[in-house]
Amino acid sequence: MQNISATETLRAYFLKRIATAEEDATIFAGYFEEVRVKKGQYIVQPGFTARYKIFVLEGAVRAFVLDKEGNDHTISLAIEEWWITDVNSFVYQQPATMYVVALEDSRLLQISHEKEAEMRQVNPLYEAFFRMQYERSLAFLQRRIITNLTLSAEERYLQFQQAYPSIAARVPLYALASYLGMTRQFLSRIRNKQAKR
Image (cartoon, rainbow, N blue to C red; front, top):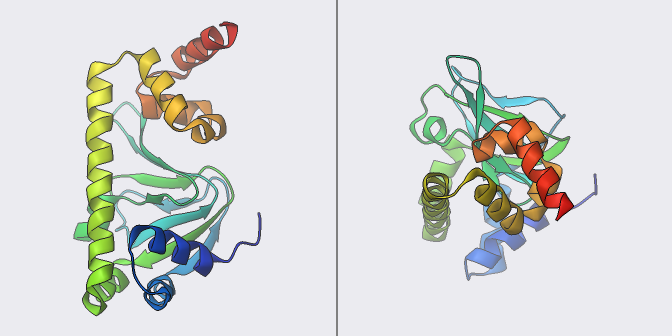
């Protein structure tokens, strides 16, 4: 993995979204701690409270649930400069219902529930940042639900591939198929069909 400064990455990310002094961005980044996780390592598991919100510096991470038959359903994916956690568990500090696992060796920045609450009190800009983040996440989730209800499996895949080509190329087939609401075999057929065109 490249040796990118975690603080610089998060500072730049914050300043792209909030017009403020660099000092505010530096203080913001100071609330996070860097962790490294190996491919296959679990970050959140059902029954344990999600204590951290995760910002991906390098790597790929997946959040999923298991149904009663043991089938997994990918709820969210995250690569560089995306956020991930079991949001319900993190916000309400209740036991998680999701697994969050690294799909690749990853560098992450994490902030605890307590630190985020403290940060929101320190500066209204930080409160505004997290509010905007939740609003964007909610809008994304709504678009995803509508897409799942109105588009065919092939249309969902093509739309995802067009919007997020780097994720479509990096994420394992099983995780992408699960995210798009189809079987691995069906997604493989769609990909083969597209490759022949």
